[in-house]
Image 1 (cartoon, rainbow, N blue to C red):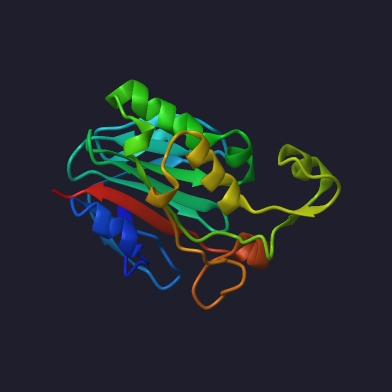
Image 2: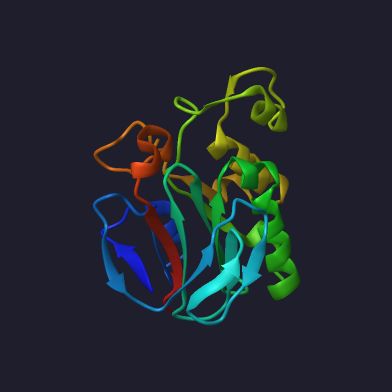
Length: 210
């Protein structure tokens, strides 16, 4: 199962968790074969625990404590969110589009980690990767209503997920965001909103390396 190298990293996330490897894919990323787990992403709030490589099933988040096993998600405007618990040495990779965000997939993932590993949200560190920014993400009234807005509106998915992390008990100082809009930077990112069916996908990953 390939994951991406030549990726973007969040230095604050890496510095806080030296036992981890992580990366957010770009359109220039080059694939290499490593041990990784993936999912058939269905824009849900479903979370799966995994301990072996391969496609685990239909879901939009993965969690593990398996050393050396990379968790990967693929995006092209949706947000890749990576979570790590330095106490239980557990990790998560989340694919958060508007549906998953509206259905609070980040909070579901933290609950899953608590039940599976005994995770305390106060110990968690989170990294929010590139996705479509509020500058470019205008939605219709039906979707806007899911986020407390009326009529056509611009939705900030990165901020919505950051708030869910904080509401779950993750300290704000332990939440890091790459702050890049996939639609705004065609030379660096794939974007479904910009390119439609021609858009590629970018693979982001997290792995317990030591």
